[in-house]
Each structure stands twice: as structure tokens, then as C-alpha cells.
Amino acid sequence: MKDGTMTLPMKHRFHLPEGVIYLDGNSLGPLPKGVTERVSVMLSDEWGAHLIRGWNVDDWMGQPMRVGNMVGRLIGAPDGSTVMGDTLSVKVYQALDAALKMRPDRKVILSDNSNFPSDLYMAQGLIAQLGQGHELRIVDPEEVMDALTDEVAVAMITQVGYQTGYMHDMKAMTAKAHEAGAVMLWDLAHSAGAVPVDVSASGCEFAVGCTYKYLNGGPGAPAFIYVRPDIVDQIRPALAGWLGHDAPFAFEGDYRPAKDVERMRVGTPPVVQMTALEEALKIWDEVDMAALRAKSIALCELFIAEVEQRCEGVTLASPRDAAMRGSQVSFAFENGYAAMQALISKGVIGDFRAPDIMRFGFTPLYIDEDDVRAAVDILADVLGNRLWDTPEFKRTSRVT
Ligand SMILES: *Cc1c(COP(=O)(O)O)cnc(C)c1O
Image (cartoon, rainbow, N blue to C red; front, side):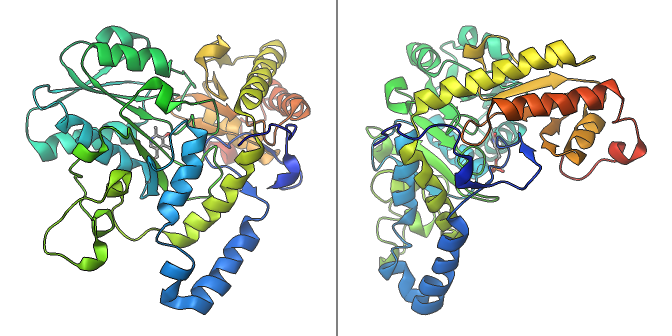
């Protein structure tokens, strides 16, 4: 599937604005070439020309499973075990509900404080909805392994933390969860397309993730959910929508789940957005994930070394050990928000996460060593000459 013949980076495959060094592909990947044309054709030749017939003749109905297989190949999931739809928060809710129902005698959902708040909020909402006295237990990321006791129903863990890039060992943690009798639910939001992932080898029951970060599907691109094939038949979906029904167009009075992972679909898929994603995912056929990971580590190591040598006042917030880090590097800096705004004004786009984290994503598809050095030149200028220290850069926007 992956011949690995493409050499990294593949900058020519992306629309990258002149004068920008884009270190925020961990939040929103850039626009891959070909997507604009493909979406335009979809609009005119499919929706425009075929109207309602597009569901059949253009197979819009099969797209969530077809695109799910493309994502599945990237995360080590067999064909037919991954489906697209909704947003990641919704997929977290569905997977967590299904996982809890597999362990009705246990009440603890284990997570850690590096997790993204939406995952924790969804768990809190689900606990209230179920009203069965579940507890969301949150520990430090380093303590998860020890906290996997026989009280735990589900370990709901995001493999790579959004703030510092702290990365869990999927295989070891899943094995420990299973030893404790717990169900394992992985959130791969910062893993898919960033690091090699093999859900099958890990043996986890559930995995979910989004596609607008390292998979470059565009803002609002649909999420994915993987369910281990041997357990999927037992799932009674919490969100029992008609497109997760075994026969949506029979319009039966009662819900019957569709076969396999298709039961995790809910309602009408976002076809335009899914088409952008499907086109964007084609690039991965040419990428060798081991080579991508090696390059990502090299870029991150170079960035850390250069920043620590040339920039004053910032402290590495990410794990120093590359094996424990995803594809991003974070530095803590008291005036991180203003410093990031100053950086962005000079063409280096990263982002800021409260309270003081300056976050830089390294995506070897379109970032190389020269970009890293050029970004550090600008960061050193911003910090050394206090370019951030103006009211203009301290005004906060709605999205940071
Ligand atoms: C990005 C991210 C989300 C975002 O969820 P949406 O529903 O897609 O907005 C949720 N969880 C994690 C771990 C993330 O990294």
C-alpha cells in the first residue's frame, strides 16, 4: 500500500502561503493540492448535475465507510472496522457509552489531565445522562498505568496530549488495561497521521479521532471511530440514528443496528466536507509512516536544540525523550500569548494554549530543517527584542 518512494517533505502537494512557516498542522492541516478541484467537481457534476441521485450514482451513501477504510489503513485497522461521521466529541460519547455497557459492574472511567477538555466534558455529560453513579477519575499522565485497577470500567486516554505532546505507549497501556479487566478507548486526534499507530496490534476495543489536524481534511472535517471487529455486534448505539439502522430505507418503526461498525453512523453525512477529506487522504498512499516519524523526531530535536541555544526565558514543556513525545514541541513562556501573536505577525504560525504554552507542530509532509532554523531566527528576535511587548499582541481573540 505504501511504497515509501516519496521523499519528505512534499511541500509541492500543499497550498502554503508565501512567507509563512506553518507550525500549526496539529490544529488545522493546510489545504492539499487537488482538493479545491475535486470539491468543485463534486459540487457541479455530482450535486449540481445528479441532484438526489448522487446518493447512489456517486455513492455518497458508501462514502463514510469508504473513507473510513482509508483512515483505517493509517491506524492499523482492518477494512470495514472504521467509519466516518460527526465530530470527535460525538464519537468519544458513542465509544464511551458502548465501552461502559461492556462492564456494567464497574463504575470508574479512567483518564488523565493531559486529555483534551472536550473528551472529559463528554464523559461528564454521559455520566449525568446515565445516572448510574459512574466516576470520572483523572490522574497525571505518568500515573495512568498504576491507576489501571480492577475498579476501572474504561480507560479513556488520548495517546498524544494536546498541550505538551506527551505520548502514551498504546500497546503497553492497552495490555495493562486488559490485565485489569478494563475496556480500552484511545483518542488518536494527535496521533493519526503524526505517529505510526496500530490499533489491531494494540488490541484496543475502541479508537476515535479527528481528521482536520494531521490528516488535513479541512475545518469541520468528520471524525472517525474504530471498533474491534469481534465486539462490534454487541453494541447497542447510544445515538441510534437512521443511518446506523440496518435498513434505513425500510423506515421501520423500531431501531435495529446496522452490521459491523456502520451502526456507529448517526445521520446524513457532510458529503462536501467528506469529499475534501477523501481527496486529502490520497497523499498517505505515498507516505511511509516510519520514515515520517523519523523525520518528525529529527525536526523536533533540532527545534528544541536551537531554541534552547538561542532563545532566553522559555522552558521546554514537552517531554525531552522523543519516544514520549508526539509530533509537536511546546515551550512555556509567561507572555506566551503575546509572543505567539508577534510570531504570527512575522509569518511563523503556531498557537497558544492556556495558561502559558507556546505550541509548535512539526509535520514532515511540508516542514523541513530550513523552516525550523528560520522559525527559530524569528522566535529569537521576538523574545530577545521583546517584540511581543505591545498592546496589539496582548489583545485576545476568540480562538487562540
Ligand atoms: C481536537 C480534539 C478534539 C476536538 O473535538 P471536536 O468535536 O472535533 O471539536 C477532541 N478531543 C481531542 C483529544 C482533540 O485533540
